[in-house]
Image 1 (cartoon, helix red, strand yellow):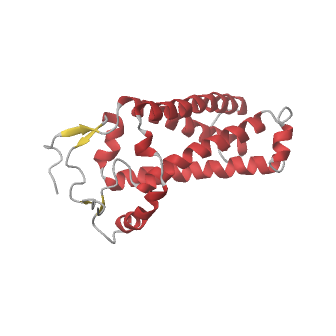
Image 2: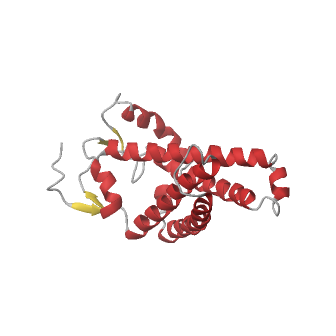
Image 3: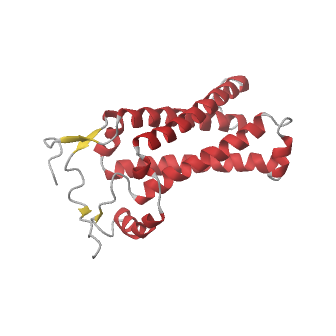
Length: 213
């Protein structure tokens, strides 16, 4: 194993990435907690009253909308989308990724900044946010947007979609945290400091084979 404590550190997450990450994570977390209370206040006793939960939910909804738009703009402006966006060619890397996380193999190819699983999750979250925003507005303005509700199958279906996608967010967060911890604490800390040891993962990364001419 490398002595990461003495190795040179390099920038992994610029300040803009870290700001948007924590902004959106805070908004999503508060949306989940307040949403569970609004859905079932007798079981999720997280707030003192319904008005408080609704107010937090409404404010965080707008915070997430602006945070998601800002993150997309930042990704395009800095070309960071090349690191984050899932591409069809990433599918071929999934077998090696699964083998590594199931401890079948001790190494994996050099995927770049993010592995294919992370890319798929980050790309999917953008569409999940869009679904939550649309269904959330329908639930918040049931009369004004009643035609939207019935176009999706009715208010009950809209509520079910909103609730199920919330659980997908919960699972994504759990998997995200687990994979970061499993990769090593420097990965987790890099979202705070922005930096990581230069030789981190040098032992587990396989060199990419260049395509034949």
